[in-house]
Image (cartoon, rainbow, N blue to C red):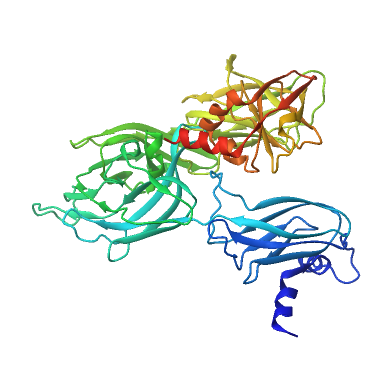
Length: 551
């Protein structure tokens, strides 16, 4: 057998053989449908147009098939039945960003019986690299520093830092962040080193501080916070050099105190910046001395923080929280007295005379104020009579949701007063909730606007214009057929986009807000049906809007 023939046989996927291998089926077992159609093509670099070898190509045929491209970027899927297929390519050297509108290596293909689709081209967009050097204030290299490229995005709790890539400086102080998706980035360096200062004799077991300096996080080029920093433009395939840092030492403050009672078990601490932009760097996993209840957090730089202590024992959570303002002056010891977390209990009622099953349903609670979670979010089984009880809800703001219940939360009463299920405030005392579940959904029939005829890949999304700001639903739509959605009654924005990456939109609140004026609004009433002509937003417009938001 010639080498070329061997290569093609390896890359041309036989549907029957691979499905047997993936499912463990023997020759006598039931097989999926096969046919005589095929899909064949190449994966190429979107910038250089060179073939990409060893790229993985995936299709939804049968139980899911994959192929690996050869040296010429070629792949093939054979013995396919007629139907609709999606084809996707990926490679470790070509990053895929959930926030990017660059060329997406994804195609929809319709195959007729015996049809041979050839010359399919999938584009992979290369990533960029950012490199530089980190030195101290004397110009000496600083190894072991972490460097992160990040973007600021509103994911529902205000603008926060979303890391996209990181690296660590070597013995020369040099670093390189590779495979960054195209875009604008803030680049930050963090060096976890200290510099001892001259001081008088201190006993080895003394609890006083040995004076020392630490290094504050630094954004390129020399800014302490992102809003004053310079952005780095990473174009696909670019190698950006000269992103250098000169770290300046600063004297931090020690936060010390006592948390108890000691009988509460293993107590963990978190020091959480109040500014959402810096919460990524919260200090977690600190422990209190089990025998004395004492704690000490060294080298805390100036800022506003929440100091949180928590533990759990015997199914009960304990919690304490203190606000801490760190400046230049030493702080007095902080006393954290843990108290049992408040109990959240109540009843879930079904609207009307319906008999929706409550068995196997759960009530889940997720924090929405950016606090750290020491354990999984609180969740409780809903009993057959609709009652529930949770003993692990710490004070703060929460979003409640139902899992396994055939309905939606229509209203919530907390202590007899109307409350908001997606922004529920839990205080230090126990809460009694009465949750009304709606069973009458609304129907929305969405049809692509006539002006969208001839559009290629399309993704669609519906999101709440009032009510629950977290309600979003993506759906399929094309120029031939309408889509019917079942949603809780309310007002919604609806749009179609010339991209399949609808999660880019669903995770970016600022972008959704900017899209409202370009999208259609529909009112959906309980047990009613509403129709909407969905406008198509071009990918170029989406990219321009995203770039404007990030300025």
